[in-house]
Every structure is written in structure tokens, then in C-alpha cells.
Length: 517
Image 1 (tube, rainbow, N blue to C red):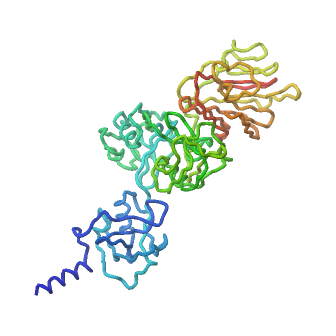
Image 2: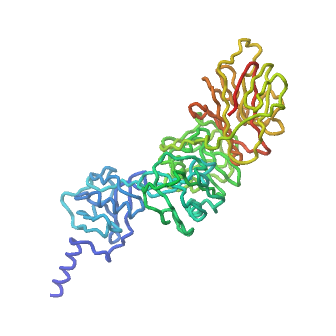
Image 3: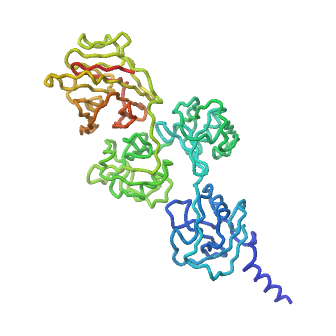
């Protein structure tokens, strides 16, 4: 009789509903996909790992797996081994029947009895939206900007109603960005066009993530101010950015180490490295890894990293195997770049400031209106500086160029105009090169050709017609960017280190007429 009872218990365990006390509910993982929240579902029972047969596999089952792994909501629950077959694995369970609210797929009903219809071509898989995330955008670094959150695969904005120090501290801690330097409201980093996901956020300050704070509820669009929340954190010792594209998700890779920006040598640089960078910047997956940087050009800072060999699974580029800090093994100067699939175009106009010049700062051949904004040159090329210099912060100025003012005497014209910024000590001094090492960061126009001289004296040329030029400066981050202000197209970004106050710098050739905004 006792033997019969034992037999019945073993039979029930083999074919009946799962017993939650009999297995380790945490041994569930995804495999065979680059995305950590997609792939073949693998479970371990009794020390042995195997797949799940796709028999009766559906979205309720996928929802449990996605939630169990912290991967958000399900996108699909494909069967038929769409992510490929796994070597040396066989289906471990089948007939999974989840309600959708279980904490683990191994707490759902299932059968461990072998099914004739299940083979290696019927593995169950999931595609999840990915984990909830937070990021700071349209700021100078990963640790400052407009607050955006990702929920169920959708990025959205956070209303600034009730936004304060405690809320900002949670964001800074969640992003490993140190302490709160300041919190912003009134859309200080620009108005987002994304949907509103969070409003009336009221954190205690000790929450581990922003979505654990009290709020009105996901996607509840009740933002009385219509404005976006922002945060500026003290930052971390090492951080990363992509530059010279106008898009935070495309550009030359630059790393801030020991409070100084540097580049990454493109030796050994490949798409696995790019995947890590894109994921670290919340920019999705990598589209390409740029070498011999013909698109984003080379930087002029020290090469901080070389021989980077990521596996692609690291959370940060700083976790990847590489040469020692500052050990430059590049046989030539060529920096690594990245293009990610997501896009976060930087909007410099958020930092718009009025621009004018001092009418007393130029000779009689440069006519300046009483408000210092209308400039016309009636003599040979003359330069003048803006009336206000800057030594901190972010600034954006625009210059309207009168296209009707053309000069027919080519021999009289050397430079039609030159716009940008210059160091205080050299801003009005005449130079032959007007290069960064001389204290100038400028865009020069001569007929239909536009030239920028970088920090290595290399000239970069652009062609077309500009009627309005935008000039953006981030003093602390050492950025000077030029834009076609009519189309918001990014033209070029200098990366440098300012050592003194800088001023807007304007040079006009004979007959040129501009209006400052």
C-alpha cells in the first residue's frame, strides 16, 4: 500500500499542476537574442535547464516572463523557435497556462510530461518592451536635462507640478549621477513632444526608482502647467557623450575621465562596443560603429580608451576590457564613433539669448544701429565682439544674414563674414588663421563655401547657402556648435576647454549686412 502511494505522488509530480514549493522560481532566463528582453525562454528545474514547448503558449504566459525578468510588458509570444534552436537543450515543460498575474512562469500550471508534438523547432519565446527607465535629455551631459521615463516600451515626459528636491534626488541616485545640484521646472530644458507619462510626482526621497514614488498614475494626462520637469545632478567621475552630430544618439564617442574629456581609439572598435554605448545612453540598439571617423571627424582631446573589446552585454563602456586609462595604442589618430537606432536631436534654441554689440566698439566703417543689432560694413573687413561675454552656462544666439547684400568686386573681398565666439583677450584682434589655438571658434563664409578650422588646424568645408546662423555654447562642457537656424540642421561642433571669458565674435566683409537676434 505504501509503495502504491509513493508511485501516485511521483506520477502527480510528473504530470500534474506545478507545486510552487518544489522548484527554484528564479531560474528563468532568455537566450539567443541581442536584446536582453527578447529571446528563447529557458527554465531550470531540478538542476537541469531546458526550453518551454510552444504548445498553448500565449501572451498571458509571455506577460509573466516579461514581468518576472523586469522587462516590462509583452510585445509578442512567438513559438516555432523564431530565435533559432539551442544546442543540447530539449523542452523541459509544455502546456503552460498562466493567468497573467503570476510572479513566475514556474508558478503557472504546466506539464513536465514529454509531448510527442514538441521538438526542437517548437521552443517558446518572448519579445518584451524592456524595463522601465529614466533619462535626462537636452542637457549638457547624462546627468543634467529634461526628465523622461520609459514605460511599456514608450518614452514620455514628466509634468513639473509638485516637482521638487526629493523627486530630483531619486532621479540622480537612480542614474548614479551623484547628488542633486538643482531641480528645474517651467521646461528649462525645452518642451518635449512626447506623451505625458507621469504627473504630480511626490517622492519621499529614499525611493530606489522614480516610479516607486506617489503619482497620479501612468498615462494620466493631468498636467495643469503643461511644463516639463528637469534635473541637474552633481555628476559622476566618468561619463560618456556622443558629439558632432546635433543628436545625442549619434556622434564621436567622448569620455570624461578625471574631469577632462577624451576620445576612444577606433582600434578594435566594432558593433559590440557600439551596442554598449547605445544602451548606456538609452539610445536603443546600435545601427553602426564608425571607424576612421569620416562622418563625425576626430577629436583633439587625449585618447582615454583604446583596444576596447566589449562582449556587447556590459551595462557601461567602462565595464569592457580595454587598455589602461590614457594608454594610446593607436597607430594613427582615428576616433571611434557610434550611430544608434533611436534619435534624440538636441534643441539649442531652448537656451536662446539676445545678441547685440557695442556701437562704440568699432570704427566708422562698421555702421551699427543704436540697439546694437543691425550691422553693415562699408569698408574693408572689420570685426566686433558681442556686448556681453560669458564664463558659465549654456547660450544660443542667431545672426540673420542679408542675402541681397552681394559684392561684385571679388578682389576686394577676402572673407564675406565670420561668426562664432572668441576668447576675451583676442576677440577683436586681427589674425590670419582664426583657429581655436588662437582663441577663435568660428564659422567662415566666402561665397558659397563655409569653413571651420578645428583644434588641429584642419579645415572642414561645407557648401550651400546660409541665411541664418545659430551659435550654441556650453561653457562648462566646452562645446561650440553651429546650426543652419532656418532648418535646425547641425553643421559642426567644436569640443574644447575654455580658460577665460568668451564673447560672440562677428566679422563682416565689405558690403555685408547682418541683423542680430
